[in-house]
Image: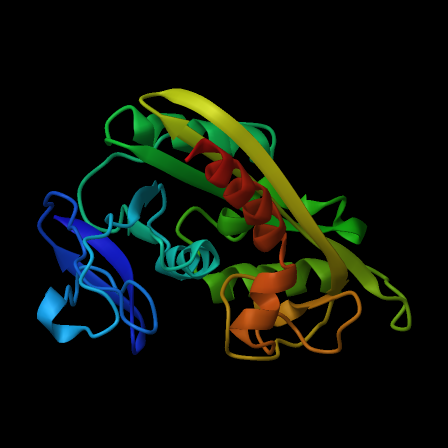
Length: 252
């Protein structure tokens, strides 16, 4: 059983289904290849009845479905994305001292037991007045099983302990490292970051993690208030993924 994100005419869909061989598409509709949820036969398309290749497949080593959705949107419809939300694959110990090291740990571990190309992301928030905390512990800042809200509340509590001038911006950045691996071999590591500031009251309902507290430089809205297209054009993950996509294009 695998967990899949697939594009359809109606947007990004999440489905769970048994593993199966790649599907070959037989029609190219005006909005492009549409994935395994709806492989139309040739007779349903007046555009082309030419047999075309199946989309490429990529495993994202995460159980965070928000992250999977974001990465799938960045990759585009030519990629079939699976993640680890279904199954009992053990999680490796993330004992690296940097985002890059932890991304490598996750990518290597998943690629040793999963077939094909594996992508792993490690990312987090650095707040300057907290000596770049929460950093690599961003997902576990309030505890190993902490929710996004608990982590945000802990961050705000830590900031409240400081005698920080109200007029001074709380500068911060999001960092992201992405590792690609196959059969236990690391193929590349890519990094991206975005500078901004922290606000002391959450704003917006989009995104995940610390997005409601972070305003990127040049904007007046938090990541959680910005539309997904805007966020995905300037975020730390988008900047790392831009390099990943170029690498993947050169490999094909």
